[in-house]
Length: 448
Image (tube, rainbow, N blue to C red; front, side, top):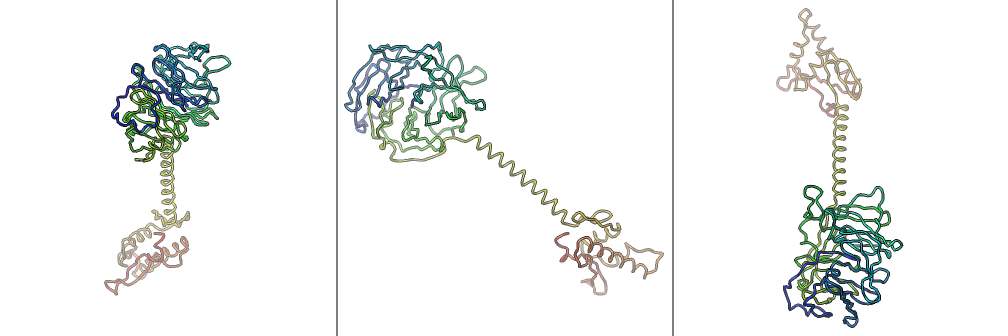
């Protein structure tokens, strides 16, 4: 696995912390600037790249087995990778690909015509194939992967599925490789508007699935959790990195967990290039340019906090959809419930009453009497005045009044199936000599 970062000079804060390291492998290189270190596990060595040479350092004796001097202008632009047990040197800003010849000189093996592109791309090896992702050139950031075809000696575009999403272009980003996935985040991206500046930082976390050849965005990094990535490595299937303030982190990409460890002073002495984890030790270049190592557990023994690394936009979007659908469902159920309740209650119209889809016709005067009764007890005298016919006798008017009340109760019996009277005649609570009419709320309370 390979990570590409911008190499920045890093001044030491503490010089007395060298006792933490179990070995100081290479002495200070006063005129050379560290660029990268690479593990060659087959040869049990670390390849230490500076701006002037490659040093092959034995991990048993901690001695330099061989040094290859290469002109500064050339070596500073090379990215070393191990593929099929051989050292390949990839040009940072072109498709030029080299191996070491018998005389340890550079031997170009590609037929590529790519120039001034793929600057600061991520370079990694999967299934004995060298890949590159992203990179900058010609005022744009690459958003695709290429691979080195051994048969044609050309860099070819690695295909994606037709339905795949398109990731954001990026360079100088952090990347990691699992068995089936390539993940990247951070780095720089070119703005799509205006002056096409590289200023915008990439906050998106993207994943490529090699099995289905599909890109998928995991989310957006939560801001202000760390101060840029100064160096990273993979251990125990997790990504570890330190930032520019020498804070040390573990990142569980798919679990979406960022763990910050309590600061170990030795991290202040890390030069800002990616360390190497190997056999329980972390190999790194210190601020004096010396290759050193530390027991890995010394850095990870104490956790400060664990937080989420990114916000899952699709999950937020899906959650929003669920909430909207749920609200619409509840709103629909409310109106259905309201309508159902309305159907289950007596609906008084101008000329009749509806109940559960059935209808009975009533005289408008009967409806008026019912409306009066809803306000409280209705004295017989008011009903008499409402139904009074001057040309009829008092007895006849009394019969009309009683008939009206009986008709209302009869039709409510038929409509509702309730055997009790809807309108009840009783003595007034104020004066027993007078009668009043009121609604039978006890029998009809659920439907009125």
